[in-house]
Image 1 (cartoon, helix red, strand yellow):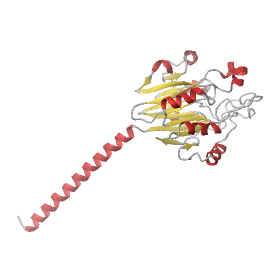
Image 2 (cartoon, rainbow, N blue to C red):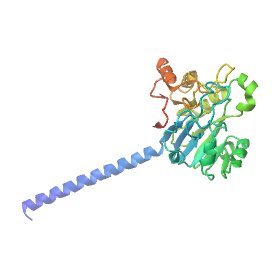
Image 3 (cartoon, rainbow, N blue to C red):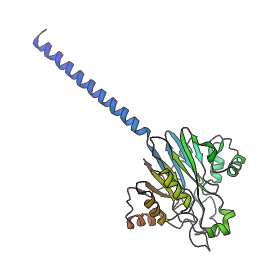
Image 4 (cartoon, rainbow, N blue to C red):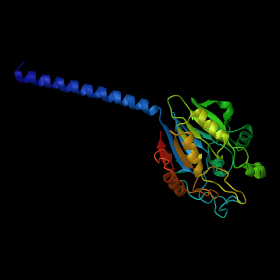
Length: 298
């Protein structure tokens, strides 16, 4: 073999070794990336309190309000009752919103489980509810796979834990408890995944504190629209000060405020909440106020 051929052969071998090494490095990197992504939790605000959660490859739709803008009259005897609900359109196509594996309904008020959701969601969709009373109502709408959170434990390997709450102050409940009813939140837990707590339509309560202290969620979603009923002091859900309370109790968690700018009785806007976060130095990177359709990954 000539010196030229020997040189060319050596060069070819060297190139092959380098390419093999690069391929192995890329393969290891891709494997590591896939492993890292396995623990990622996806969050998307659809509108109001309607959110999609991608948890370990399972997509949950929480509190679906799916109607077109202005489909329903405003809630009577509430703030801005002259406005029709929802105040805004869905930010993404309805078919995309409904492309899920399961639905969680924290309670049956129409801004969390509306006529459009009852009509258009496939009747075989697994629906998780807070109690047997709600389950009976949902079954009457034709849904064939309705499960009570306290009885199921997990779904596709993810623990779903019901958390209690109270839909208003003690004064609200004394006068309107029969209308405000029972409400709930839910904690998502799975090994090697960020834990997530959706508090639902509740004021700041001992149940909320206990859930945060017990489960130490990495992500906490609060309904912070400060919904107001005429003739009553205070709100039937949380407001901006509750973000500060949550930050003190969960200093390392990501906090997300939703349930704003979409139904008539929510008196606190996103703009007001964002201003409060800046004013209180709550760290905007870990205290989020998503726009409709906005997504995060944790």
